[in-house]
Length: 323
Image 1 (cartoon, rainbow, N blue to C red):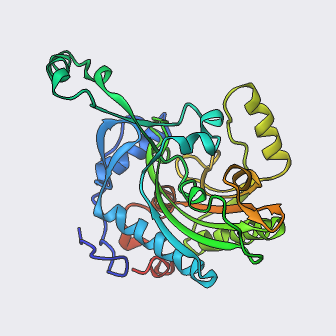
Image 2: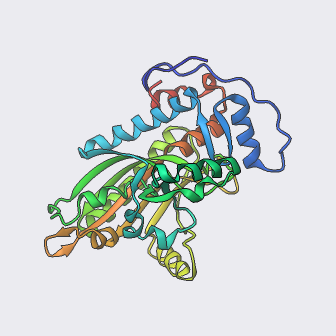
Image 3: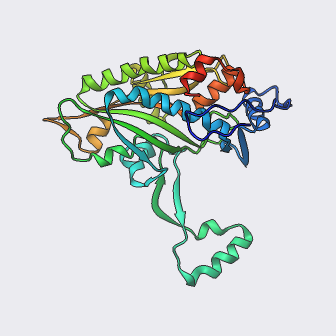
């Protein structure tokens, strides 16, 4: 297998043919097993947590570069955010109330040398986590969320502000579906400004996303999303989201043609983050909107559409990825 040095290098010539899987009744597990057999993903023993091969990363780099090329015309401010955030951010963004089953926080040992013996004894029994304490840190739930605190209390110019965000995301959602990974990457383009401009940003990026995916040879369509918000109040949130068409997902078949997977989403937040973080546009609260490209999911959609042998991919797709 050829090793890539950067996104513009020649792609791998291919991967070994996957071994047959016994799990033909489960298309999600079957595709994951094919990816394992081909060495594109490497199991860790935890569903949804995988090592990624250089070949897989070559696809991700190509997608990343294609999105940045589209975003460059807007001259956005670019940020790269880490996976770890202040845990309080999960509260201020309302993620704790909406998706408590997906969040993660970090614990660490803080009792000093005096309690070290107890920790070692607990480690022998496998009960050592009970000796850890909350660090005040959490795991990022959406790549753009760390942006808004950096703008807190700021006055947004009349033309608004545009950002390009690279970030890692954690969601505690173990699954055999290879597209539902617990740690993954989002490449987002965000707008903060006037309500009409935020809506226009979302709509424009729906069209750009559709165009990119179709140039990559994917069968994709835009659908109104219906997120599974948590609890009784979640049904109201989901109904409002659907009725106002606040979130549009671009879906493509990966493991199932009948149940296509969201690979990109475009969202109007209205004044949610503007209110939470004090973002002003003159006398009004600023609105925001974003588009998020799920890099692993797009890569998997490409593998499902074009096969695991890269040399057989259409030349136009390879060119779009910069190979």
